Length: 122
Image (cartoon, rainbow, N blue to C red; front, top):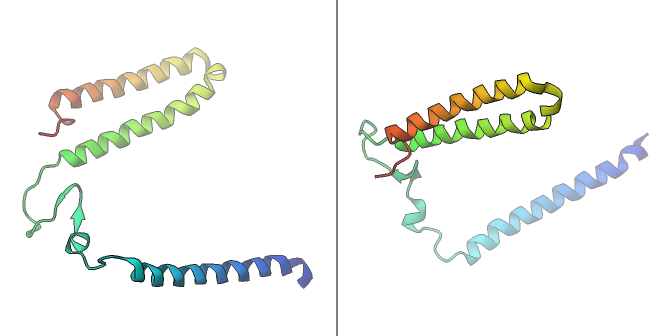
């Protein structure tokens, strides 16, 4: 019974050993070959496309988040288009009309956001 699991055990031992060796080599060699690990620019906090503030209650522009939300919405649109395109023959005209309505609503939303200026970086 143990001989059935012996190849898996050998594989796990070799994988664990290799991971440990690479981890130790990576951290040791990285410190040795890095030019300036304590660079202040590298250590500074960077978040959301703009410099960090001193006060957390400071007002900031939310257009970055609007573009991110729009990206997610239109990325999900594409995720819905792939299975629809694959199954178009089997769902027929009803599926075509449903997807047309879905795309129409998204296009109206996109035009609305475009007219409002959510995609502009001034």
